[in-house]
Image 1 (cartoon, helix red, strand yellow):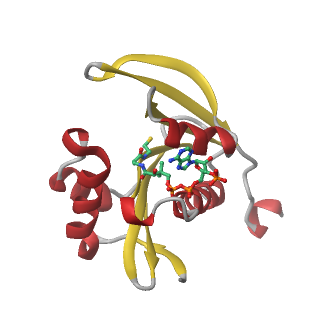
Image 2: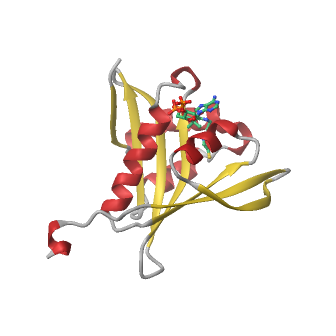
Length: 159
Ligand SMILES: CC(C)(COP(=O)(O)OP(=O)(O)OC[C@H]1O[C@@H](n2cnc3c(N)ncnc32)[C@H](O)[C@@H]1OP(=O)(O)O)[C@@H](O)C(=O)NCCC(=O)NCCS
């Protein structure tokens, strides 16, 4: 099987909405919310394809409110039949690479306190727990995570 990562777009909206519901059920972003994220100027959206079929996706946002841009991963989803094949890991690494190229040095995300698969993935890749988010998911609590990574500079920036 060949996994490829490419930029997500509105033409993927139906499948992304389907996978988001498979992954998060009642807590899933709606189709409208996903459409709005896909078309947001500051978002980065990637799909992973296995033999040409969409297996997962990630959407993150770059916030430019501060001097140094901040990254925020809003959703990371791998369709159940494609799990444990390193697709989540690859999507995470690729969005971080793009964040880094955009000057982002810190990335934040949230995960449910009981979402061990996600917490394992994030902690394994260097995210640190920075707080507990009480009732962040309705009845369930969240964990706030942060990762700092080296910013890759363009040749122009390096002078
Ligand atoms: C979390 C998720 C994205 C992981 O995707 P994946 O492609 O199956 O994960 P990978 O194959 O890349 O696994 C990478 C690492 O994550 C951890 N991990 C993934 N699935 C796991 C599981 N079921 N149990 C324990 N650890 C798990 C492991 O550390 C794994 O490394 P290993 O295979 O060397 O043990 C996927 O399970 C998913 O979409 N879950 C539902 C949506 C979700 O929770 N998203 C994150 C929201 S914050």
